[in-house]
Amino acid sequence: MDRKTFRNWAHRAADWSADYLEHVHEKPVRAQTKPGEIAAKLPATPPEFGDDMEQIIQDVDRLLMPGMTHWQHPRFFAYFPANSSPPSVIAEYLTATMAAQCMLWQTSPAATELETHVLAWLRQMIGLPDDFQAVIQDSASSATLAAILTAREQALSFRGNNDGLADHPAVRVYCSAQAHSSIDKAIWIAGIGQKNLVKIETYPDNGMNAAALEHAIEADRANGTYPAAVIATVGSTSIGAMDDLRTIGEVAQRQGLYFHIDAAWAGSALICEEYRHLIDGVDLADSFVFNPHKWLLTNFDCTAHFVKDPKALVQTLGIQPDYLKTQGAAGYNYSEWSIPLGRRFRALKLWFVIRSYGVSALRQIIRNHISMAESLASWIDAHPHFELTTRPSLSLFTFRYAPKGESDLDELNAKLVQAINDDGRIYLTQTRYQNDYVIRFSVGQLYTADRDIELAWNVIQELAGAITAAP
Ligand SMILES: Cc1ncc(COP(=O)(O)O)c(C=O)c1O
Image 1 (tube, rainbow, N blue to C red):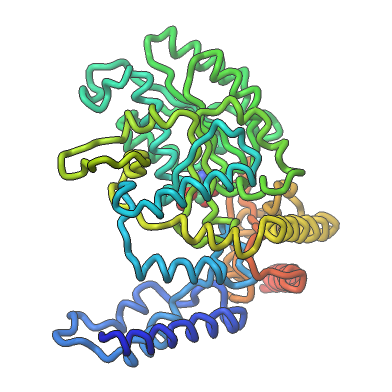
Image 2 (image 1 turned 180 degrees about the horizontal axis):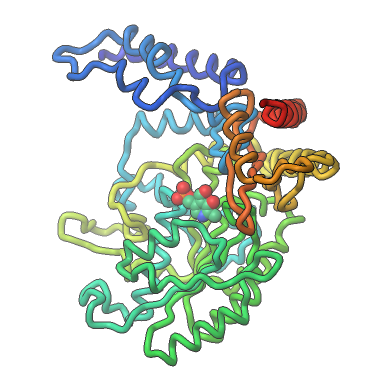
């Protein structure tokens, strides 16, 4: 493609994107296609000669769009949001154009220095103590893996990378039963083994039981294993459960364990001062992770990984073969803080978002989402045929349909979720709470407005009525 044609198509792509955002609310939120339906329409072999761009773009609309689930739809209430925003998209376009590998300071000093700078802004925005430094990772899963590897190495006096784990006592890691599955996966990858991930029981408020935690650590140590890390969650995926960081951090500190905090979703809400109490005790942490790519309008991938002691992280993940050595360069080499070597220029989109919106507008967006979730939860709570199963934690709550006389509520609610998502006007997902099948409702999409919440409530009532009326 020559430069003139590129310019033309770049303008066309901008129009496509603006049209998409203008009309996305008219589409079913969740793709309504059957497995294999899209793949069956694609040619089995690659083209020997280049296709016309006009044809390729038409195929995006014709072949692929029916199979897209629309995460930027204002009535996307499933999972957690994965927001994009216009400034973020524009920055991403520039990033893709430059396509710099920002693995070493020298391979793009501006990218490294902007990353350090914009993360210092983010640290101030969420009220973390200023002795945290930070790096952008591709995902919270990677950041948590990096934390677990660091904790493992600290517990093994930095011998694990060299020796392997076979000749060392088992390393033990602790989290609550509410913690995200990325912790389980990190444990597998770190070679620690699922049986050495100890899931601590929770208090009735669903936060980790600190006394049970301390008891488990002491018992494990008495058994000759190496307790290495405690991972606390601020805003669990299932119901938004919050661990009490101060009491858990004090246990970790007393016991000499690495303390990591997973605030992947809820971290964005900390830009509002009224939610800072949720991280009281964060000063005791060794690392803290949250995803601007969830709720801070910065499209995937952008995970902020804060660490107290970058030296321990670099001692765990840093490697300097001759071909990566740089002469006379004094800045950070962020690839030594991360698992992959290659790194995109992710700081640019975060910088665009923060500059373009300003912190005050970002705060207002988060506050609106929380207030919309609280309104809907209160309507559900007041309805005689619905139950609020967990109250709003920030902008997430769960509920179920429980009309009098229905015996199998799990099956009824599974049917309701399916009916809602097949209908297409809204999209939400399910989870289990205290063994019951419940429906999750998460508000956080940039374009969601009050009318979308009202429509969601109408759809839920209409389809609930229809499934109980059906013979
Ligand atoms: C609490 C929590 N931790 C970790 C993750 C994983 O995030 P990522 O997709 O960035 O790895 C999620 C994803 O929803 C989450 O909710």
